[in-house]
Length: 107
Length: 119
Image (cartoon, rainbow over all chains, first blue to last red):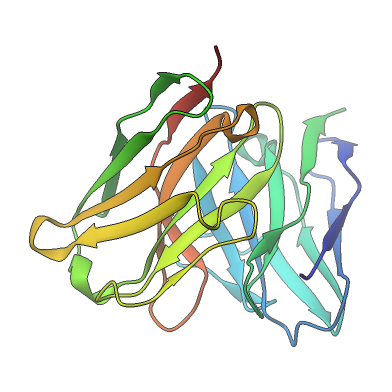
């Protein structure tokens, strides 16, 4: 199974700040890496697919990058609605696995 | 508008069974792989099962293989999860999710249904 290690687990940040969340796979996943946002009410939506492709309707302040085993999600300028949980997920092979999550919170 | 609405959750004793349902609308259900993903209280997301468009292929992680069965009824645009031999560690919110065509990205999610396994 491919293990996904996400960091940091908690990220205090301020409005307007640029932040980056990292995700490392236990083996190469050939850019098969997705990012999701989960709001406090449990609502989950996809943000980025295949490392760097923005899902429809997602603001352009979100971006993704990476290759091999190391990937990242960047938010260029934090808005109030961005404070939430973020998860990476590999879909290179079954079993599909998620990172442990990053809580982006207001500093 | 794509909608996924789960039902069937509740409190169940260890060792017993429970069946979850997901009613889909707003898209051609039979064209999409579907899945269940769960989240234990204050924990992260865990993929539970995926089913192909026709239902002929199913996929599970080892944690539920042999105990859980995913199925679908394309005529009713419905997805199911039969959970047998439930354990306390199966306590979680269960989400119904749609796979994007041609990928295993989860592009739409339901609001989730809570399952509590406790005596």
